[in-house]
Length: 564
Image 1 (cartoon, helix red, strand yellow):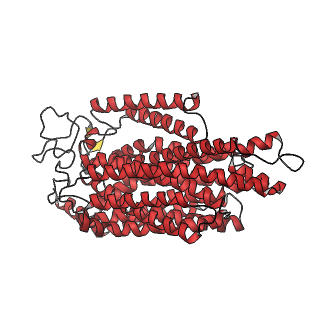
Image 2 (tube, helix red, strand yellow):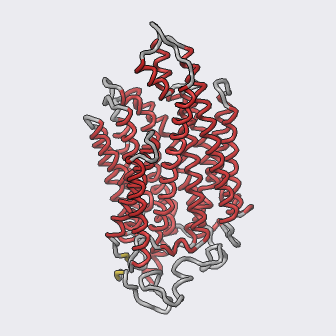
């Protein structure tokens, strides 16, 4: 190593906290935009003050973002490894900002859907790059704290989003909730250029373009099917089953190709580490349960409880505060209890809050709801940081983007699965309960078309009840919704308990010091006894060239590498 490289290596940690601040601001954009959109949905549906979007169009305003985001995350991780996380971060910010500006001035729902899709692509470049920057630029002794701050940015974005969105919609037109992203992007770009170093790994990866194409199409197909399932389509219908089967087949081809590729987009040896594999499963399950729960909790607050969207958003801030505090407490608890038991405690705490909803009704005190949301957020905060630290502890620098992409994909796909699961349960049980319910009829009652709407949607039933002055209809719809919520929360709690079992069995780390990014006592121990990917395997007979860093003896780059 030259004297210049040693100086550069020392210079990076010295400014790790300014780098972290910039990266967290960029990461927060993703969560800020998502929570702001939730507040703006009603306005977008207004034909006078908004775009007059139909319910199906509103679903795709949200779903287009998720579809592209989840579908292109592996590509974002590969690009971060190939061109460096700093360059990928700049590209992601620029694309996100441009798409936000275009969406703000959309003249119709179709335009906004396309803009949201490009915002999803920008986020797919952003998220893996931000975590890769943290892993590569932060000293080991500070890395878990940095990851905790990175994780808590989600809670801060979720907390700030409804407040910012409500204020903007009170004074400006609907497009302001997207236009606000542009100045934030400009500040982040200036910060990246000023303080974030290049952080190029020891080798530059060759892009596996066929593999990236298969991952985008495969993940896109699976997520599309999940979204359609959550929108009320039957699981065996062509809109759900066909994209799921096609997407699954493409992902199988992607995995098979990665095993033979000299320059894989996803190095499957990452999953040889039990901690990485178990952590991925825990994150998937935890985010499934969380997203599903927040989905029906929002309907509960604005339905049977009768809160306005702004008031419901204020109550939901309790969960965001809990996430922030839990993320900050997790490093100390991990040192005290170990990462394994910290994660297990967090998942078990969230499961307990889901069970609590089995006793909720239209008279449950709001303070009780807020308290459970806080506990739920705190539990999720305990989960995210230790799991991420354990997963990333054994990932070598040149695969940090790929490891970060897996971490991000599990969160996004888990959230989409959770909403689809609870959405399907809510819809099915509500329709079943309403099919046998007696609804008002006659001059002040419902037409056949209105009756069908009321039996299909609790929101439609309440709207009809208000316009026709039929309080008994609203009461019937609320009872049916509560029964549906009980069914959804039961299965959400079961899912969380499965996550608890996986965390206890799968995260059996050995001497993990999460104060230093979850690594073990030596630089070659990842806390699971396997050692970092690429280091443990480089001496194995039969290993393909192009995987793992060159040997310390001065070996050259593998077949899949381009000399830097």
